[in-house]
Length: 268
Image (tube, rainbow, N blue to C red):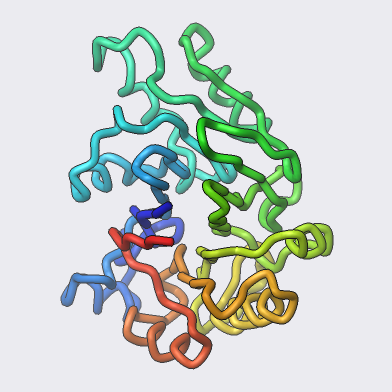
């Protein structure tokens, strides 16, 4: 199984639209791994995770064909993960397709918004709930509850195939106790985890900084959920975290954590 990180930036990407901070300025000048589009990923070329406003750019940049996707999995309804208006380009009059070419799996809020926005479209839409698994082809997907939006069942996603397990955990904050307890039943081959706030603290508890990422990863290792062969890769980096890619490498290297970057392909 593999996962490609199509985007590893937070809500306004890096460099930020109007960001005049040091990280945005550095990214504009130097490019490379410091340029980050809004967070999204693709598993085995067929399971698409989230649909940000940068999806077209990500598809073009990585020479992808969206017709290869068989499922679109949503984590939550924030605009940088759920660009609902972009879904229209899959059907007439923009294509000759008479049905959406992939199944959508999403929580209640997203399902309601899609139905309201496209009431007459032939969309295969399934509502997902935390701690209730579902299958799609050869994959078993288990949503687990994230700490992000108080009145929404925001998901992190455990994706399993052929005894390999990936936990994709963006926009998560420190998990609630029920999620930590639930994860004790798993051994993960890969954790992709957000690091929105970089070196800084935030008054909002729905994101993580470097210190919190290390704390979460250490707990998972102590519990045996991650072992010596498990990889840990970061995503969802914000420019207000004051962390360039090289800074993230230095900060995370002692903890065997890898900073992710746009286009990164991870094999497990």
